[in-house]
Image (spheres, rainbow, N blue to C red):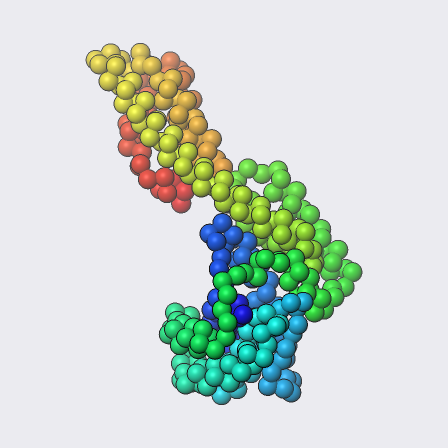
Length: 319
């Protein structure tokens, strides 16, 4: 079967179009994206490295049970890369001339392309029809054997110098230490992505796959934090309104704001996991509510008014 088709600009190695025929579940999409990024980078390097001296129209790179077929289309200044099962190479070789003919019909689209990938979505239907009608398409994924594919890719890469390896390891280890010692989730996710990139350069399969899993966990945790932020925000407003209603005409300092404090404090704690700054405002307001006897009537009134005006949309606190 064919898993994916990539189109690269021959002179830049830039990926300008991709079409996947894989069945990826929502839960594995994050891992697939990182894993597939390594494949696309590898193919881009192949295309750019061979573009000046490629003697044959077709270049085949075997990766265990898979194969990457790279075909040069000089008329439109594009290189087409197909990732497929090695066992299907005969049928794929038969369909490649048809794909070349199809793509050459869009000569002006490629030669005048201005960098907008959306313009190339016009290729989706004709490419899919050509593939489905000529090659077996089974709904499975390269993720069935990610380690095997990674090792095969890395076996074709040039070895780094000992100095480069040492520098990359030091950079990655420092990032891993920071990830384990900070609480901010977006920062941890960003750092984890860099760890994946560095592990790809180091051909470190275990760390590469481990931090793909870590990003999935971190993103799930981030979604959970956002859910709890919404919950504590709602409870803060409910508790504050209830406290004010119970006060009646009594002075604000006689109000019972314990429940408001607890929910607002929890809100600030969760917000701290997402934002480096800005959460302190709500922590400070919570503290002043519980220590209201040390706050002036005017300041206490202003705090309550500000809390009642808080947006109910969690995203407003994340920008």
